[in-house]
Amino acid sequence: MPEGQVITVTGARPIETLGVVDAHDHLLMDSPGMPDQAITDVDRSTEEARDAVATGIGTLVEMTPIGLGRNPAGLRAISERSGLAVIAASGFHRDAHYPAGSWVHDAPVELLQERIVTDLTVGMHPADWDDPDLPLDEARAGAIKGGASYHRISRFEHTRLEAIGAASAATGAAILVHTEIGTAGHEIVDLLESVGATTDRIALAHLDRNPDWELHAEIAARGVTLEYDTIGRTKYHADSVVLDLVERVAAAGHLERIVLGLDLGARDYLRAYEGGPGLRYLMTTFVPRLRRRLGDDAVARILIANPARLYAVPARAGSPA
Ligand SMILES: [Zn+2]
Image (cartoon, rainbow, N blue to C red; front, side, top):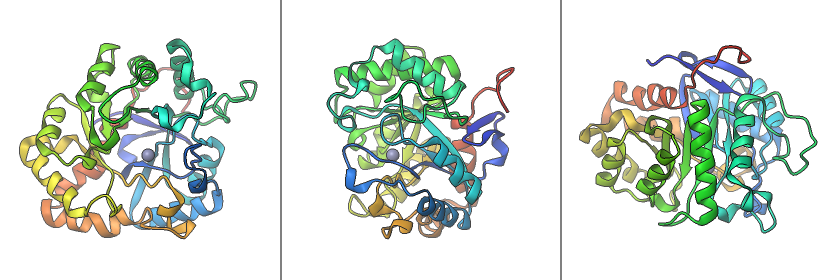
């Protein structure tokens, strides 16, 4: 097990204490692009978090970035009431999630980077700087979200990814980048590396939307983490697609680069909001099948050791505990 700590919304904690990690999910989110799918009820989201804990999940990485209804105080309440450790995110999504007029679109790279580093080292802004005068929340972010478009990185996405890469280089925080249907992976990594981010700090989300194991093995060979997170969202593909993919990528020698999540960022997906499959699905339905394919040791690597290594940040002298 690697050494280090992660930053959760209730403080820093040693990575040995994380347990099973859902490496990408959502507890509170309100994207301007999906108003009817907002997840904003702290009581219901606490119920969903308790359900996850009951299945054996210890830590959830809450990947809602700046501008999509981030609620640090709400995440603290959910974590305290459910016992689920929650790593929150800073950073920015792809263009499609920001309405016209959002400050995010044309902010200079220096301002974008400064706000990410503030989230990671001081505390998250409670309203994502829509009202810059509000005091920062006590909870810090522990990871950085990024986003790119389908087979391309737009001009504004390029600027945001520069800020994200530089913020990771400055803090050691992990970056998880939304890929649109698993595309543009190499280009995203090239850009982040060009501003100083190292590949051991980079993960690419939704790669299973393009279940091309040869491409994934190439990306993993660069030291990048592969995130498979379309599990249980059957409208996209069957779980057997992800099981096959994990098996082939592991056989190609990259077991240590795989992490899993469900990415249930909509009311329709959460049981506490009368949807499904719900956060419980990972452990109750998918992981038993994965164990039959790979055995317990490999599953522990994927669920515990790999995400702990990815989301670990260096302990800093004087940082709040
Ligand atoms: Zn997500």
